[in-house]
Image (cartoon, rainbow, N blue to C red; front, side, top):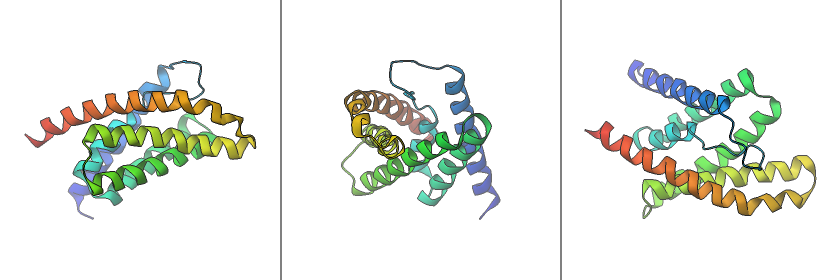
Length: 161
């Protein structure tokens, strides 16, 4: 691994941690536990378009582990990892298939992140009633995914210049 590659990845991990911390400081209570804008996903979506997929996995997992150990718990790490893994798999497949803009990829990622967390919640609470959160989480995922996608598209256009 080259020094430049390590430096770029480290910078993106740090940026994702900063965005996660900002989101941690500004809680948004919309009646659904854990609902967030997903600012750190801005880094992941951008990284998906400028780095190798293996590097994006490393950035995503490191950010989750560091934030989980600093400000969360074992359960928050499990929920975040479930959402991130499902989201990143879907985003990378959709991006590879083509036909979707960065906004569409981001929206799919946000929705899948939420669905990954719902799957873990069903297992943890051993009750399927958690599924009642799905409609609200779908709407939230579409909206937040679109916002992150729009910002990512703008940032990428600046980076490419």
